[in-house]
Length: 95
Image 1: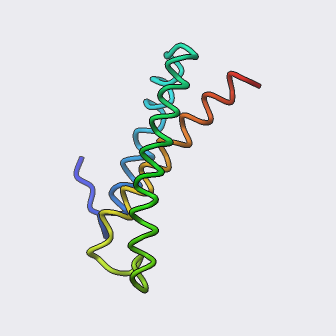
Image 2 (image 1 turned 90 degrees about the vertical axis):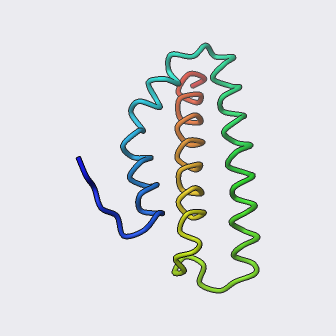
């Protein structure tokens, strides 16, 4: 199936949404200790990418509108989704 996207950010968002169910299923299959490790790793990945994004935005206006930042914006969205999936699965086990 060929899907066309307006930007790299849109493509990353689609990828994240498309993989969400499989990602959560994979997380559910992990032991609690491994799930916590995965959550911590995803937190670190997100924090790194978020810092890149924040530093880019601090130096520029309208980064969301500029095509050269669409890849980083998409990566930021994807890392956020991965982090959120791990948090949701981890918290569902502890509550």
